[in-house]
Length: 236
Image (tube, rainbow, N blue to C red; front, top):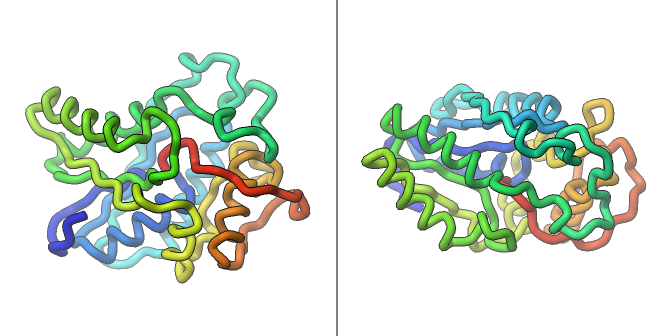
């Protein structure tokens, strides 16, 4: 990732640990960090967006631009699906494949990239990890997507993925001095809290545990035992 201290870099934020650490990193290394949240109408987004605003307020300083919220409705496409209002939200014992959201990285990245192109923002950073196994998270996918976006708009932002060689515990350690308890990673929130029982809560707990960093997250179910979780299924 270039480090010349100039210009604006947009950051696709999702409320989670990866994007939280990423936006703080961009804020430190560039003149201006522009967080962008894309709202798709999924069941956890009201809590997630509130957590994003709270986290950004906690790390606010000169160079961190106000959050931009874009809409990319997907409920009509997914239909009766666990991510909208369907039953069977994947729990802590479900495989990571169960939380795959088709086309998510494609939709979020393109929406944010068009916003950047229309405002002459030359770079868009994403917090996706190298351990992510899904087809829309590979190096090749993002390289080709950057090329397609540029051809479609006669120019477009570079897609930066500075965490592509890292795993979740690595990112947690990098953000150990940040208010990570304000980030949000749950797909079945309970009264505004992490449920403590879903696939994403299990992954979050394992990330802090394996990083050796205290997890100050408030879970509705504080005692749910979890095993080792794999990679996050979508942009951090």
